[in-house]
Length: 310
Picture (cartoon, rainbow, N blue to C red):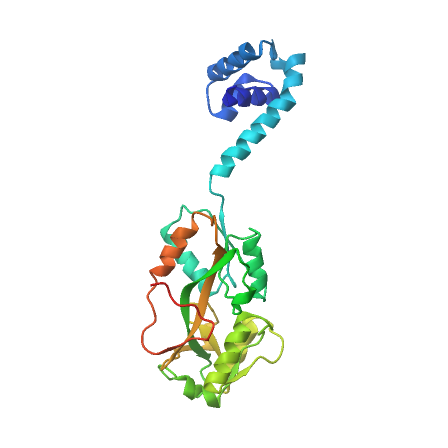
């Protein structure tokens, strides 16, 4: 049975006119008439009777209509299964380095049907579970305990995000071109909102231990605006941000972003995706990540960082 003939029949039955059905399907009225006539010959029944206002279903047509709708729904589902759906990717936040890199990829591939979401899950193992169940196709998260990674999910190195010191104009390091981790030991680094079990909690624990820093997570996180306002007014408080992370502030704040070097502090960003049958459009993103320039010079990474692809 010709599925397009069945589709023409359903359209004509629902719209009541062959011309309206033709307009709906983007074909001529003559084509609709021929398809329905061929379907009637195959079924050996009359499906419509003509009226001054269009067409009406015969008793046989009324009996056939619900089954025809079911047939077309099945055909549409079958076709949709062969067409890649929107690629759904989880990022830590829409101003994060992951989102920035993903946007750069999309700008060079604007035809990609991409759905960028932020699951707002602190535990990366929960994000891995979302990948395993297909709720998202990939997640820019790092499970620091490999034993917590589901067996049907793999994790690969995406890119390193070098740290920058963000300070206000009154801070003693405000005019430095670069700073070293050793120079940061005498200053309070305020990073509100470090959530237990999060990958960034593990990152800061290792950072503090390695460089003997004072990272303060005290107080609730009232949002980036409050953090930026505090930095602008303070001569003591600084924070760490990723070099690609997007922050905006009023010009009067006069905040400064200062690279951390000797060694560079690198936050390793990973990509989690299914081990088998990943979304076909993930290949383009992985290739884009592989083309990002690597960090040069001495670099510090936490112990759980994955090796970059060779």
